[in-house]
Each structure stands twice: as structure tokens, then as C-alpha cells.
Length: 86
Image 1 (cartoon, rainbow, N blue to C red):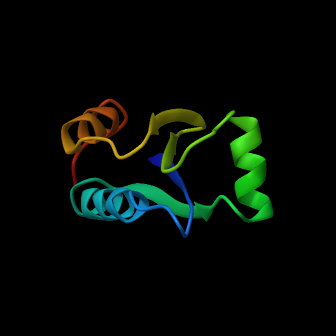
Image 2: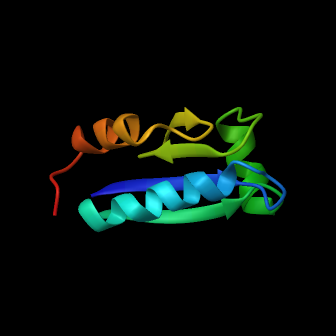
Image 3: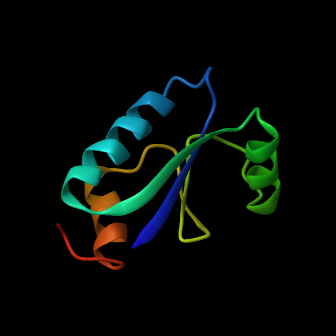
């Protein structure tokens, strides 16, 4: 099962779209998902570890995979390489 972390900011205009996309994809794919606010200590640590300078940022299985809101097609392609649809 893939582990997806979405790093977001409460003031980010694009972040709600990224959250919605990943939540919708959980219907089709089974993966571990968590959202982390970049303004928290955990968020700051993730941003430093992955050299993230913008949100939303998606980390899949420990690798920074997307900055910004990925297209549904790109997100599904990233998931398909790691798992089967449910």
C-alpha cells in the first residue's frame, strides 16, 4: 500500500483542490493518506527534509512527487505504478 502525505497551508488557495483530488482517489485506490499543515513542527520538518518551498506538495512513499495540484491523470499514473485499483 502506498503512503501519501499532502503538505498544505491553511492560507493556500490551491490546497483544497489537492486535498479533494487525493480524497477522491482513495475511493478507487487503497492507500494510506495524511495531510500535514506546513506551519506545524511536523510540516516544517517535512519541508526541510524534502526541500519543499511551495504547497501543495505530495510525497508518495517518501519521495516528493508533485508540487502544486497534479492532474487526475498524473496522480492516477503515480498510484497505478504502486498498486492495483480496489
